[in-house]
Image (cartoon, rainbow, N blue to C red; front, top):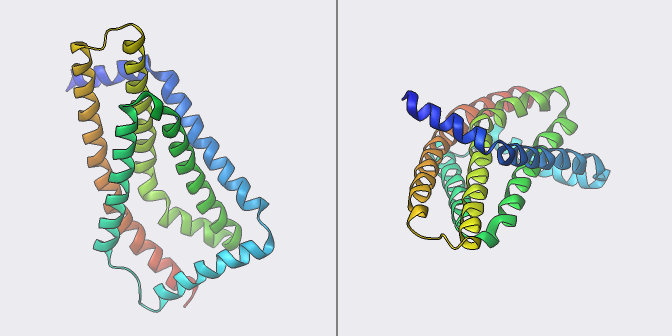
Length: 212
């Protein structure tokens, strides 16, 4: 256990620049998402808030989606996203797409939180803390690590191609690549469970208290 922890720490230290780059890229997406909310016109905000209120109306009208359905949908979404990052890491030309996907993930989070807070104020902040934050505490690091690993493996392939060493040594990093992505997939199951059975229940309780 200690040896594995040491290997993980050494790996992060060795590729600290890439992990930092991916984190900054994600945070840049969050900031851009918040900027988009502030740059929207009044009519656009009202149109979007109309659909949000309809969703809240469905919750108060006891038409909410079953927890298990949310769990399945959330998990399959994370699985497809991670699988896409995994495949892109196997090709050098997929690296820019990895950057775009991570930036867009940050953009969605920033826009979602920014819009809810912008429209509902303190209640929106509470809603974001209950409905968006819990699962994202887990899933955001998963996406940052997945994107970083994809970039690391892609650069490893690139270096071996240029040095004509694309042979047996690639099997060991590839095995680690698969193993870590499998672990990230397991963490995404936990995140999907939190979204379905924690965030969803908390959101429903808060929405019903606001719109009762």
